[in-house]
Amino acid sequence: MSKNAKLTLLGVALLALIAGGAALLTIFGSSSGTQGTDAGNLAVVAAGEKLYARTCASCHGANLEGQKNWRQALPDGGVPAPPHDKTGHTWHHTDKLLFDYTKLGGAAMTPKDFKSNMPGFADILSDSEIWAVLSFIKSRWPEQIRLRQDAMSKRQ
Image (cartoon, rainbow, N blue to C red; front, side, top):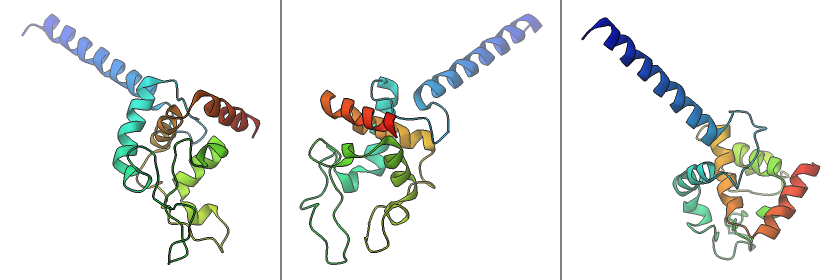
């Protein structure tokens, strides 16, 4: 292979690497906990859907439906996983609270006398991945609920 061909190939590889990095930033954004949700970004929502299926659906349901009788205490004092669809209360909370609850877990976010079975995902998901999961969840809400929750999040 000639020197010019090698340089051309190296240039193409470098451009592909830069383009790949830009695509990942578009999908996952920054790694900052202040990134926020983007329910209108199809790439972020698609990534969040895959992450949700892998890390959340076993408790919160494949269709965000939560566990049965989610408002009733379990024998251990905790409560079943709530739904994340419009029938639950997820949309009653700000993006920041949802992010912190997901990252840190229920025990870190609730009063000492409340038993939460929600684990923290700080060691499992990056901040950007948590935002992607939350973006997916929000994308499934009716527009009126999403707009109300967005307004509440902006006021915080």
